[in-house]
Length: 428
Image (tube, rainbow, N blue to C red; front, side):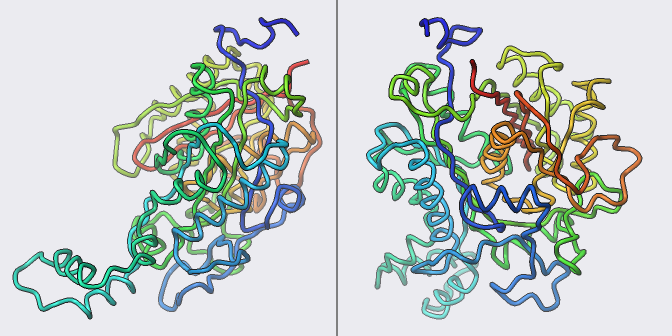
């Protein structure tokens, strides 16, 4: 190949994906996840991790099959990321001495209430209003507890991953709400395009389902309360959707410059062709109802990829199953693609795995690449009562065989954090 063949339409290095790993409530590893996802299997189940009596939402997509030395969100998030990174590096044919930067999307975790109460029981009596944290700190000064500190320090996840996998430079931990996984990928793409590295490790992980997290989302009226049966609760783009299902998972993508990947004889799984990112100042949690920022995000991704609307053959939708977000996403897609949207299959992985929050953009990017590699479109399950105001080909209930060479994956998060990725098949 000529040097020009390794450059995109703007003269930047083309970014290839050479390794992928994934964990969701459907199972561990790409093979098991893909078989379940394309089979229309749901991983949503009743919560057993903590008591749910009296709660309106009693279901989730937690990952409960990974052995942990300590049960807390930081340890879970690290374990999921560790396992998916091992899988991705093995597929890429790379050792744990990775030699490139790490970009990690991780949940902003707070101490569990049980830990706070335990500290409060040991703390001296209050001397003034608002001195709770001073009292907590005084306890830890008297008797430092490294394990407790690590359970609270979500930024330590990236440091542990960097030590384990031999990444280069200071690891980056980021949180852009539900767009975090896609943002981590975008940072890896930019590092390669700018010539700062030939490869990057991009990870999205989230093991933060706790009683407090569930209650907080429930207070926002964001969660589905259709608990019975759990597998029917997540129903994106359906008329009777009532909220998302909180879930966990992780995904890792190994990104390399196409030139570097070809030079070392790596198998190229796909190309990260374009990234778009826009902020939305409309509301702390709600997306702008006019879809303006989401529209701009999709258009930015297409422009960055150097393709127009006719070049997209499949859309992996954000598709949360919340009434407002699904409506906004449909408005954004129909505005960008116009009449072409009727001919573009659109499906939501969240109908089966729930919303993996910080990990969602990375998990769905892996499934988007797998769609192109296998020629199989995952279904949107539970689609039995279509919303007449949202006219989409959602690949209803059953997978579909179709050759796709370009995919758009959307991630539209709380606080107006919007990111879209355009991925294409390996160039000839």
